Length: 322
Ligand SMILES: [Zn+2]
Ligand SMILES: [Zn+2]
Figure (cartoon, helix red, strand yellow):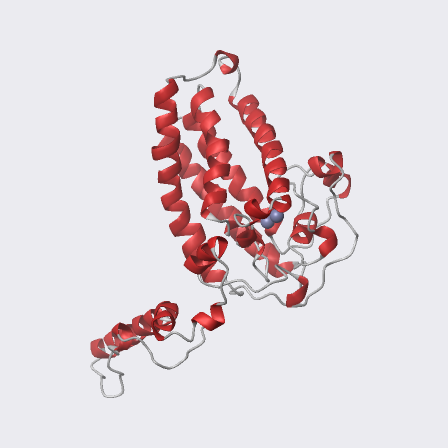
């Protein structure tokens, strides 16, 4: 099968999975009353899922893995020559998942590495999209370690990479999904939303627990499972970080380098202008659209002229609710 056909199939499966998970969250929510357009929804969708993923894919594959491949000029290690696609996928799935468990554990134990992981824990409202929120450095490290061995060692990277990426995305959405599901005995092997949602809860006793991504067996095997048989609670304080965290994508990354108070920064008029640029741009777009629609129907009497204020920094303090 050629790669473009495979990518079309994996894309169709991925979008069907998104539709399935969204419906499931509405029908049987783990945490009741969580809105679809929850806090941070647009940051996760636009910045982390679309823009960041697009650029990091190019950076990781074309500028990190390709030069490594070129340097070593090894393709398809003899070990994998006679392996089927399924066997290779299972091998890379297990080995990468064990690595992710260990690195994730290290990120919670090291103050320095925590700076690359806290973004992932910053959401107070966790749903299928929340897993996409990951610091740039975290993604670069994890995806290079995930995909470089496949590109270098597998004789079929053009098949393994899209399938592995699809499984990652599907499983990532599933373990973060706000769904009520019981796995029975299977929970000792496969990770569940229940275990991973607890990992996103704001409780001291779970900070060093439930590190698994796909296979929960690592947590059971290494004694880091936390499964109290109850839910963390529906309050905002029950979830996310115990300290304030910026809402803006760029500030979230700046915060990992230098700590600051977002509310204090908002008192600066230029910063305030930048911070409110996106909501004002949206308002401006809506105003344009309304104006154009009314112009088309010939009724411009009540149409508002598009506002030019987008280019002006605002002197007044305007707080932005994401
Ligand atoms: Zn974590
Ligand atoms: Zn997570």
